[in-house]
Length: 111
Image 1 (tube, rainbow, N blue to C red):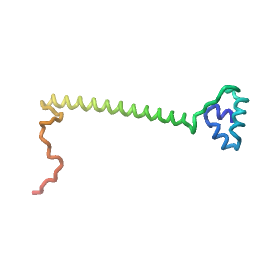
Image 2: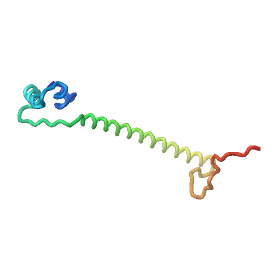
Image 3: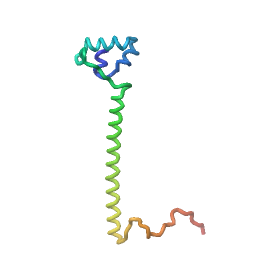
Image 4: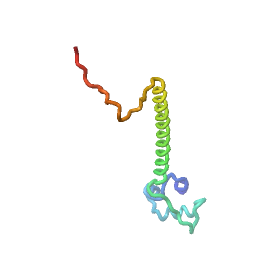
């Protein structure tokens, strides 16, 4: 149980509930058998898997940053394509306030 606690796989509370031991007994064992935690040193652990939640959020931030990077590359590419098409056809393809609205996808009349 001390190994499970030290490796971060379980908290003292989880071990206490799973094995029907008091938290005080588990803390005594940790102080007695731990390689790292010694008597007189206060043990502070994050509640309810906060460390795993932090890791999960860090991974989500990383994935979102990658998505933003991919989108920015796509935006840059499309802007360059619009500029090249404008140069090729000699017109400004970027929308501005003087451009008349297009008809859109109105239904056509059958003849």
